[in-house]
Image 1 (cartoon, helix red, strand yellow):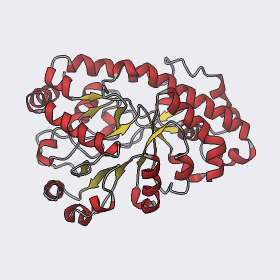
Image 2 (cartoon, one colour; image 1 turned 90 degrees about the vertical axis):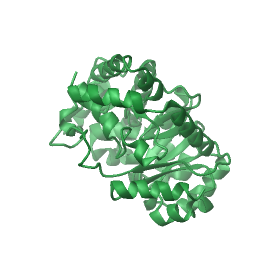
Image 3 (spheres, one colour; image 1 turned 90 degrees about the horizontal axis):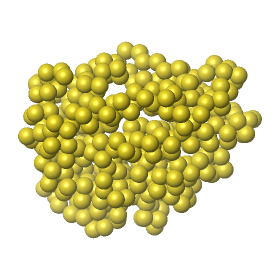
Length: 373
C-alpha cells in the first residue's frame, strides 16, 4: 500500500467521530422530512489548501490505481474533504465511492471511453447510427462488460482496506457510484443526435432508454451488496444525504420540453426509481421548466440541484413543500448564510451547499452560519 495512504488512514481512524456523523445525518434527515430543525444542513466546498501535508493525486492517476483513488476520496472529493471536515465543521456526510465519473453504464454498452489530461473520463459517442445500433446487441445485465468489473473490484479493495481500521469502517459510508440516468447514458452513446431522434426516431429513443434504465437498475441492485448506506429510506450522493436509494442524473433533460420529458423520459425515470424503492432526480443547468413534470413521478423522494442559482427556486419551493419533495444542494450566497435569512426563506425541506472562494472563507462562513441558529 502507498505509504501516504497508510498514514492517512491511521490519522483518520484516530480522528473521525462516529457520534458526530450520526448527528450530521439526523440534521439532514429532519430537513429532508420537512421537520422542524434548528438550521438547514450546510456542506461547504472550497479550493484545497496547498499547504496541507496530504495533497490529492491528479485525476488521471486514479482511474487505474485503487490506492490513489481511495486516497483522493478521503482527501478531496466534490470540492469537500473528509480529512479537513473537523476544521471546517460543516455538515459533510463521510462517504466514499469508486469514482469513475459518468461513464459506467455507457461503457457497458460498448461506449468508447477516453480520458484526457486531468479531466474526468468521457465517452466518445458512436459516429454513425449503424454503429450506435450495436448497443441493442448488448445484454444490460452482463456486468462483465465495459468497466463494470473494475468498479466491482474497486469496492472489494475499499472494504479490504477499511477492515483494518474499525473506526473508519463504522463512520464512513461506502456509497453507489455515479450511474447517471437513462437519458444521460443514452446521450453519451448517441451524442447530440439524440435530440433529433426524439422527434424523428422516437422508437429508437424508447428502446434505448429502456435498455439504459434496465442496466442502471440491475447494476445498482448488484452493487448494493458492497454499499453501507444503512439508514432506512436515505442514502448519500454528491457529498450530501438524499432521500431514497438512487440519484438519477438528468442533465440532458434541460434540452427537451416538458411534453417530451413527460411522454418519452419520465416512464423510464419512474421505472428506475420504483425498482430501487424511491430516489432522487438531479440536474445541472436550468431545469425549472421541467420540474413540475419531474415532481409528478410517483417514486420521487427528492430533487437535487446542480446550479440552483439558474432556476426559479422561489416558484419550485412552494411546489416542493406541497408535495413534500425536499430540495438538496441549494446554493445560497454568503449574505444569506451569515445573516441567517436563508432559514427565513426556507425553514426546512432544503439542504445547502456553499462554494467558498478560499479555505479560510469556508471556515468563516460555517462559523457565522452556526452562530445564527
